[in-house]
Length: 72
Image (cartoon, rainbow, N blue to C red; front, side, top):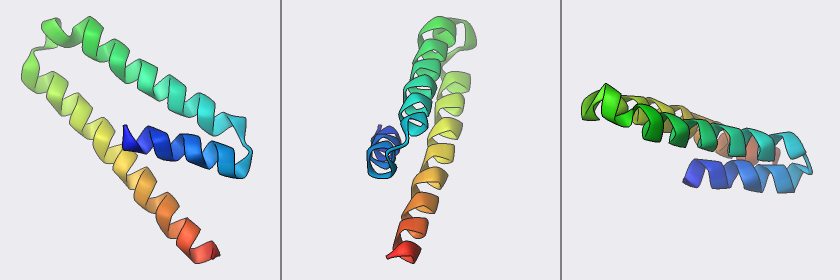
């Protein structure tokens, strides 16, 4: 959830609505997959999917953080 908060903050900071839309859509997709396919996939594949999504979000957050530090 921190990653999506960073996207929303980035949307406000840059006055760019697309980051808000991306944050809402990715969060919705991940929740949809978890609820819809959770029992069909099983615990470990679902946790693996969530882990990969969290890893990608962490890469985004750290990349944005480095970019922000470079610009200050």
